[in-house]
Image (tube, rainbow, N blue to C red; front, side, top):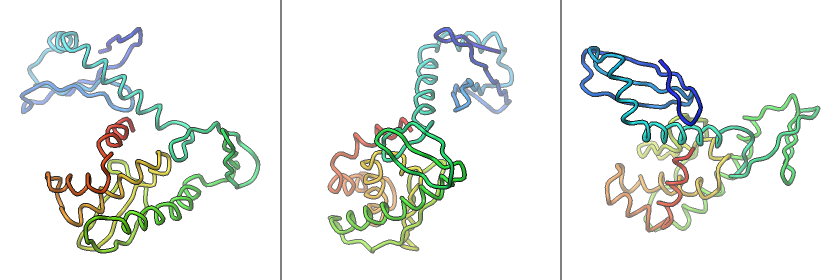
Length: 212
């Protein structure tokens, strides 16, 4: 099955299960519409439901396309650079271009930059944090579903390497978020109070990060 939205044809992937009570629509990063529904719902009924919900489905596609655009290309601290391939292993930032050696390891380069910057920002936010908390160790790794993780028991904060591609406000917010978990382990109102008193602008940054 296929649908047309704004003069573009998209594939529809349908999964039918006996135990499913409702019909759910989801657009993934492959830009296909995934439909989960009951085994006894006909394709004709699915088409009708898609038509009835076409506005919200269209918004799903636009949002997913925006996420894809924001994660494509070379980004460094929120700025996109045009990539110029050169000989060698070095990666050099220009004003609007990045010169990437054909033998360069991009992830190792990001790791090197992150090791310095993430420690600097963690030290800063720990020094001005409004509550008494333990100083955590820092782990940096690439994650697909989280920007950061706090392990209170091990006194460790893990930050997503992908934050190197985002504006530094995003990095700062995630650090404050994870440090706040040392006072409140869940996401209760008390937790958000700790976040807000340390990072009053957190709601605006959270909204921006949803586009990633």
